[in-house]
Length: 640
Ligand code: WTA
Image 1 (cartoon, rainbow, N blue to C red):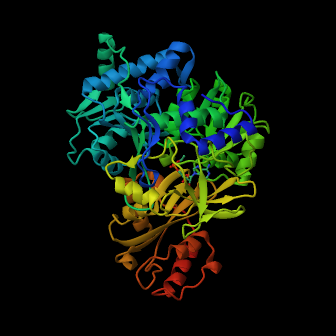
Image 2 (image 1 turned 45 degrees about the vertical axis):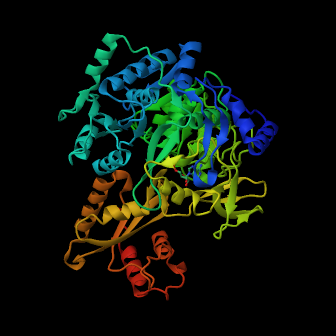
Image 3 (image 1 turned 90 degrees about the horizontal axis):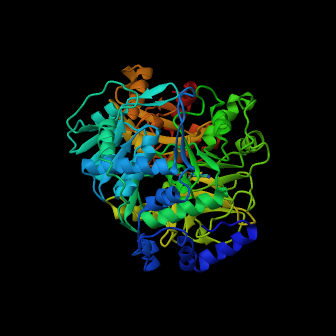
């Protein structure tokens, strides 16, 4: 794979990727093993989200992520698993061992009846078997759809149905810090409405008691059967370049989460290229991405990107503050981590725990630090740079999205300039533009605008599962001819980008995307709730917190704390604990225009405590509600 190692080489590569994308990506594609070459590098139509990359080519991504390395460097470590409890032994797998495990799980899935194109939902904790399951799906051509372990039964049921999945892979329970999450019983509940599932493969991990349904199959039993057959040494299924590799559900500004679809070849080329270049990976280095595989970062930079490059990837089961706030640094020291990739939320929370947790930890192996998922603030950037990196490690601030498949805007570690709190420059193949609200391109610098991409890139979203219109509507129609990120960005005098947060109704809470409409919809399921409005507000650790304003029936006769508790419980049931409102107030009215539209701008100001700058309220149907809400918010400072 082409590694860009100077600023000048970056300029040359960038220029070429924009002027002759076909030639540029054709060259990058030479580094992979293909079963059959492509007929055309880029075809289709960007404006209607019908771009195709490497059309006609045949491949299996695991040929490149596993088999190639299992042959060339069988004893190189592929996966190091660090358990939740530091006393539990580490498990590690060389490329040869990873290949064996993935082949076995692939065979297990085949035995269950999983075929090419079938959707398989994976709802597991961060254990090696999760990685095997993902790669096993890819190997047999099944479309994996990983669901983060923090989502509720209702969320799983919605996703199963939307994806038309017939198989689930889960485990009895997962552990994160001192919490235990009973995954299997959540799956049972998701299926309790009679969803026609074919098989549920269950890994008995913590040996907690579970119900057994007729469709349940025990992972270990099947594993032993397959192992005894010893007939699993098969190649991966031959896939078309554009065959879907996975579906990952993510929140938008309207409706239920949508299934973002990524295809095989473009995603492979992009994740491999960006991992190598952004982190400037050197052969033999150990990469630790702290993200959960339930999110896109775990897909692209814990599993696919590093493995495609033959790197060693660290997978951590637990949480940053268990057993204490030094855990990440212990893992870095223990496994001699060179590349460390985490989210600003984690950085802020570890920073607030104090520097003493860094003391005595040998961080000298660290070479590059990465940040992802939300804007990083200056203070957190500085602490990361000075205290974790000891001033020696470049920080890559990587901007991208579930829909982009991989990193879009970032400096290349130590190669292109870094600028604190700036994602900086686009990667080769990425053509960012800033548009004003009328859709006019802003060409000058020192400006803020709506961030769009003007050219297709190999790992762009292909569709939203089962509903291409929705894909068009969400990303390609706001500004015709452009892919719209939903983010605002500032461009400085050198053309460097700083992300300024979402400009739509999507929140970013602890680096997790949540739609305000989704939370409102969940709240509205609570008994007595008549209407609700949810906005984000700045939160010291989480980046953004969720602020809910709720109108209830008979609220005057009710005990407010008990209504609040019921509402929070409903949100947890509908979505999961990640969507719990941080603050929730019961009000008697919401600021609405005469046409009935909720003025979120006003609620945002109130949530931020900016009561003085609310602005004009005379266009409201009933301006007095604003005073009432302010009164309630000031009286009710306690967080929930
Ligand atoms: C935000 C996560 C600022 C942004 C990979 C985007 C960022 C959303 C950054 C996507 C960054 C991601 N700086 N903001 N470096 N990276 N974001 O789909 O608002 O979970 O639209 O993908 O996170 O979140 P998603």
